[in-house]
Every structure is written in C-alpha cells, then in structure tokens.
Image (cartoon, rainbow, N blue to C red; front, side, top):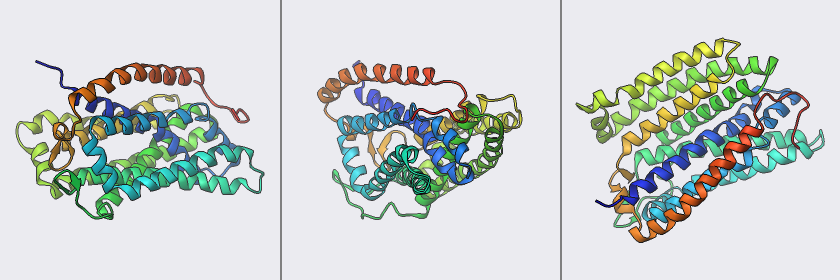
Length: 336
C-alpha cells in the first residue's frame, strides 16, 4: 500500500494555513484594536509587542499558497479565478498595513495619525477579506469541467460578509489576549475588558454560522447531525463551550496572563476543525475532492522533498524568534 501524497500535502496546507491564522491573527488584531486605544504610548506598546516577529508571519501564507499551487493546481486555479477581487483587496490591505507599521515609527507627530489610520484600515481590510474567502469556500464554487464557471461577484453574499465580520472579531480577540500576555497595568486591564466583550461577540458569530451552514447546505447538515456522526463530532461544540467558560474566568483573574491567549488559540483551532469537518474530503466544495484536484504523484513527491527541508527551518526560526523576544513589553521600549 503506497503513501497517499495528496493527504500529506493537504495536511501541510492545513498546517500552514493554521499557523498563518494563529500568528498573523494577533498581529492583525492589534491593528483592529487601535481604535479602542487612543493613547499614543499604549499604541506604541501594542505595536512593539509584535515588532520583532511580525514580518515572518506571512511566510506561512506564502507556503500555503505555494503548496496549493503545486500540489492541487485545479483548486488553486478555481480559487484564484473565483476570488480574484477579495484576494487582491487582501493583498492591498496587507501592503498598507506593513508600510504603515514601519512608517508610523519614523513619521512626524503631524503625520503619525495618517499612518495609524492606514494601519487600522489595512488590518481590517485584510482580515475582512480573509473571512469572506473562508465563507466562499464553505459556500462552494461553480465548476464546469476543470474551470470556474461562476461570475466575478459570486463571492459577494450576505453569508460571506458575515464570515468576514466574524473573522475580524476572532482576530481582535487574538490580539487582545496577546496584549493581556505581553502588556501590564492599565493597558492590560483595558484588554481584559475588551477581551470579555469580544469573546461574547465571537460566540454569537460561531453560533450563527454553525446554524446557518447546515440550514443552507443539506450535505453539511447530514455530516454533523446524522448518526453516528453526531456522537463523534459532539466534542467539538462541547469543547467550544468549555474553553469559553475557562476563558471568561481567566480574563477576570488578574494573575492569569498566558492562559487567555492559549484558550483563544484553542477556540480558533476548534473553529478551523469545524470548517474542515464540514467540507471534507472536498477541496473545492461541493464536488471536487482532493484527489480530483491533485497534481501528478511525481510532481507531489518532488515538491515534498523541498517542503520537508524548508518547513523545519521555518519552525526553528519561528520558535527561536518568539523565544528571544518573550516577556512583557514596557512603555518606552522599542525595536525601531
């Protein structure tokens, strides 16, 4: 029995996507939280908490995109064709955010508000379009033969807009709990209060999407609510409730610094797992499976050698950079 390279590549893409969501999530979340923190010194602390590591986070986005292009070219072609506009807007948002991130430290006091607004706008735009992309994948794509046959604005639906807003809330919660871990005193207390509000909002979005998708798509309803699947999948929503209750308690405990962020990562992982369960084994819902979209085995095997060499390097670099810059960030402390 041979090794199924399509499964291996699917795992690599899922891992890269999850790493990007986790690492760039709190980074983008800090930009989303800027309007809630008008104090200039507090904003500097927020940005400096990610300044040493933020530019490496997009590595995982590049890895996931390159892996999708090489291992599942049909899926890559359909997604790029169907989501050209939101993906282009996402890149514009990431560019604006990246430029603003660097320029706000060098700007004069008169120009800094402009770069702060660019940082906020770029962060929200990139996050919102990523959420719309997730919603579009859940909804599925019209494919005829081996080409996308839908329209250029099929992604513009109420459900996709709702998913975009939901991801903005999720990234903001990642950012606020990251700051609970990395900041002190008044800023930390403010982030604890903001995190409690965001947690409630996130649970509302999770509940709404969890009801919306099975009502709109019978295949997803059958996946989750038929027996014996219901018993096997019940731990996913149960864990969401348990982690949320633990999160609420930790956010009220002034001695809890790291656990709120870890619990938020758990909620994000469970949400990502729910998405995977809903669409498996389709990589282009509702009809194209992993194996139908896969590249030839020889191509997947050749690329796998390179992936197995580069992924450990990225992981070591990531771990080391976060380890070196661990601990609290103080006012007046910076890396620019």
